[in-house]
Image (cartoon, rainbow over all chains, first blue to last red; front, side, top):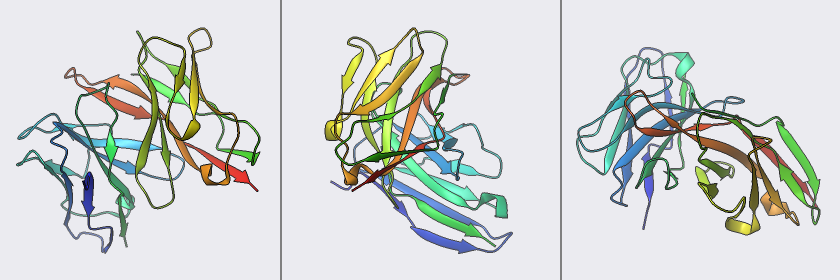
Length: 113
Length: 116
């Protein structure tokens, strides 16, 4: 049972380039989340999804887009990467919002030069 | 919005000694509180949660947390620390979006270092 899988694990981009981070979960969870982790700032919610075909903005959505075309996948896109988006990105999923714990992937380390 | 605060960036403890990692919360209504642990180069792992009921919650790896409503605290504890407990610990609280959905708001994290 893989749980939550994130690809790629590492990536270096140049300013202005675009890329997509993929999150896949095999637990049939309805809810999925994208966070970014920066030193001294904890985890901040970028976007989330409450089911297939739905997405919503979190605390820090600017510069990011997401899609949830299939229940098991949640994609995070950077259309024009900026150095301020250098971070570690985590995807999570949960069965029930707010009560059941979120399950996290191992992260994508993204550096933007 | 709901929030949690972790007042210590780092906690140092010797192996075998009891450990406490502090968390205070600010919520409207009844709080749903969580503790997660993060090992190097890994995602967060769930340790325990408080929803309702007994104020002392037991979780994974021998950890427990005490919910204190009067002090608005939810401190993480372990009677005897292990070197392998060294990690980054996050307190989190359930928050509600404008659309009525639940999300988690995390504290900034506390690094626990257990020395041999």
